[in-house]
Length: 281
Image (cartoon, rainbow, N blue to C red; front, side, top):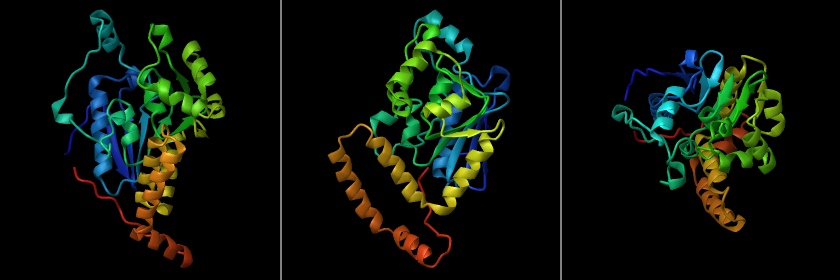
């Protein structure tokens, strides 16, 4: 389904999709429409067999400053969540096991079959911080800053960050980030383990693209998908249960053509030609 997006830019180049939140005058603050467009664009990445993975970034000098303040004002006045239904953007981008843990936003990022990297080029706050937290990896410019911003608004840790953030930086650091709501630059985020790559200013998007293209040339798409599935499904499982499931999935991978191709390409010292994944729209 081809859609003319209004608040994001969606591009695919050399196997890498890029979603750019395109509200620079509002530091890419999220409206209901922005969120619906991001979800729809991620489905387009999922069903395109030529796409290795997707990068989420922001236009201008910010990554995403959170929910648009006009929407927050409406929520405060009403005393509840508000939302609009954009029927023409209805999408189901992932969740191969129909796992209820992957149905909310932004937790549905974990159910995507393909990698999603946050290229944090500027301020990431509130829901924008949550979006980055639930991406698979974070490439962050040195001068970019992250901030939870929930406590100063009289809120709690929202959008699943109380579950995900401690797994990235540890409980004490997660509490510090939430309690103090202080601004953390790229260097500290990298030291804490939140950022996977520390980039020169302006380079996070290009480095994220290079990373996805590299794994697209060396790793089987099915292996990438199954490894992501393993990592997130096994975060909350006992070791024995995780081992049993991994053993069953390993037996399946040994029977695939990708395994034969992986061995053959290694022996013949040539790039592998792995099978692409075709998903129904």
